[in-house]
Image 1 (cartoon, helix red, strand yellow):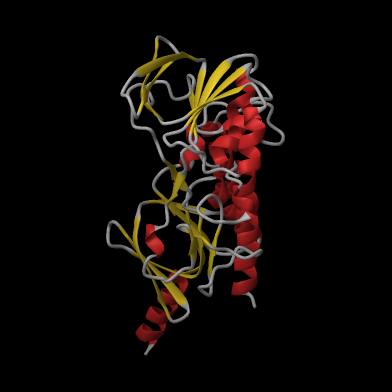
Image 2 (cartoon, helix red, strand yellow):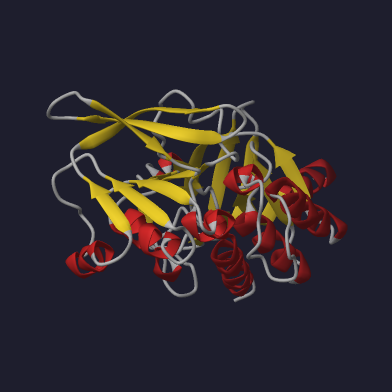
Length: 316
């Protein structure tokens, strides 16, 4: 009888209040708030910092005039750990909901149990996959106009894409760059017509039916080689920067068995970051929240809201 009671107590202690999947700004912020709510919380993830750690220069994070992504994510992690939070560096391969608990299986076949779950798994950039793209990342190649446009004041840049992100990015770049090339694979842009019309009246050259062949340079980006899809003829553009805005892929494969509602593969969240699955919350770039604004600051904000919602759910 005593052994059974001890076993029951041990099993109960293994059940966490909250598990957060994701080691980026959304996940760390959720962890910081959750620990301050005195929840028994664990953050699980493979890539420390997520995509944020790949950003070489961040100048729009409040309180930091200039900081690189690795340093900012390290500060967040350390703050979370000092508050008593736990981190497990592993991959989750399966998530199931069994009655009132979430059961997570790691790549090492370890089982984790929790009353609530926050998904802050972020996105993966859709890349061009051409020669020079990886080589010049952070040296002229960027995936975020909001982050890096100010570095190209008075310079010539190209932006690749044809949707609202690309055209909106081109509008933002025109506030800094002296010349913007907007390059799209099709004959028409998919962005809102009003935005496209504004671009035509600015110092922006729209190039249709073209694809990127390669990116060239010595220490930094110097040339962009594009090809006319109809004729196969190549054209060389002298540019100082290249912005790739061809979309993001949300990292949401883990939710396929949970029947979570999505919006173009992004997790649908309400104002409190809850989903249609009770006890499951989401934050950051993997969601459709906060007007789809994919920024560190919005990911962090969603993480804070999700943590408070998880706290209310656990203590209801």
